[in-house]
Image (spheres, helix red, strand yellow):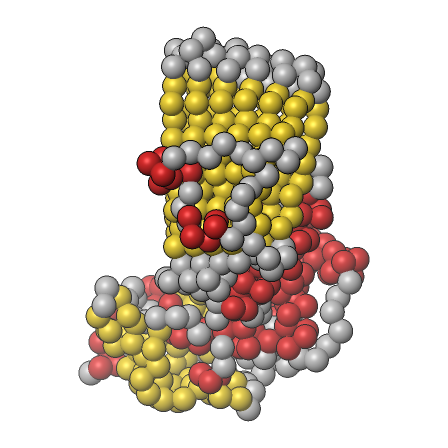
Length: 249
Length: 255
């Protein structure tokens, strides 16, 4: 597991890396291989809430009918990057639910490459990003459907919320499809908290940070819905959101 | 309880500040129910939002005293904690946040603001069930996301349930009767009476129509036109407006 990942040349870096300088501090990245055998069912929960820079590269291989449920809460590192390469055999199912919550000058990124290599495999990626201060949140997600991988159902739902006009959200879903019978839904949106909703909550007695936190809690909830550790993830996210809305005032 | 003196306010719309309230004065004492009626564009909703502290509603003159405090100096949540409730004409949908969670946090935020102990989950649910029952609302609806998928009538009833739970001193109800069918109108009217008719509470009803006043009998009826109150009377004034129309009554005042 300590093998250093093969890294792309600079000409692909606009896709693979959004912040090459920050990445230098955590170089080289150890590649973590995860293999789920045919029919297997596994899950992984990653919570990054320390101060140190973090970069991880997961390479996941799913056998026939195998399932993998990955949840990521990225909250706190100055630089946090989670790269995930997944390869799905026939009938495999991959779920990613990620929330990136950044403030100050933090840079958080989720980079995925999901390859549907067999028939009837399904993948779902839900990424929610809330950004305060001068932080940057990025999602780069590529879905590749190989020749013959008919019956693929691949979904990407990517949303970012800017709490300050000084924050930056990047979202780039990519599709590369070489099969005929494929469902690939993807949506991206970057927005701000609804001012009417905030006033409504405050008119009932919630302080401005409480109202923002409640709306953000609802915003990211979908990323953790159905996770084995849903309650724990939500609790950690709420603690982080309280800091975010405090800092955003 | 509430003393509005010569209130003037602008509303920011598309980068232009338009003066809407032009010297409005009104005093509401504990135990009283006041109704404000008036034609479209008179400033009725602006009055509600200005008293609630909505961003974009800028006070340019006058004063508002609420139970000894300068209301205009308070943030919206501080106004709520001080005992003000604003019933929205168009209650806002908030996907993903359940009524129960939101109202418990709101009630406890208000209690905290007043230095009181928070309600436990059990205490809160008991209170919510009681108030929902008053408005004939199923508790299951309060477990749903705030106002999402609610009909117009359900939203208004949910506003009244919130009022019951938050137990304000003064309720400003902005067109609570709009969008209600006959039965829902009666239920809301009875709810307002049950929750707010008390010697130490008061209500300001903002409405277009007389029909709500059949259920919630006002002590005073005011006519608002062009940003100020042009006529004040008893419940009979509302009946006259219904018969003769605003135009006739407003013109008679101007003459």
